[in-house]
Length: 96
Image 1: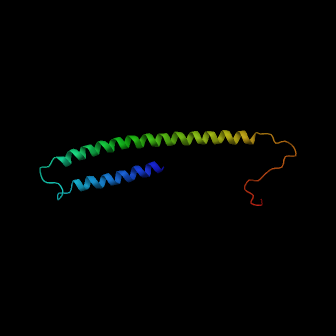
Image 2: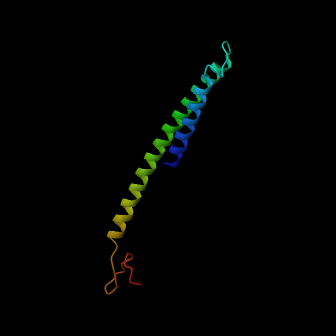
Image 3: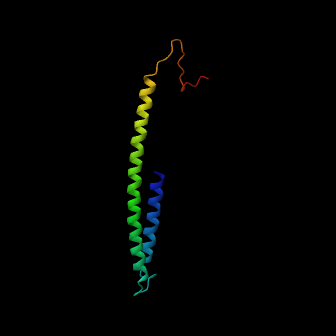
């Protein structure tokens, strides 16, 4: 999730740079350097979109794996036999 925030921050900064490059005061008429940079900027956005899609798919896959593992752990612990006479310990009890 932190990666997505960083990615969004980078995109905002790049968008500001592109808008600054399109400013008529900072770009002289007939200067084609700004257009080339914006084409490169669009390519960067496309690559970042692909990376974002892969990150989202990876996170969804990891979430399903974690849920599956938690279900397995829950089923395993609920089926474990408790020896007679074994005291149950409440790990959330503050009276230690």
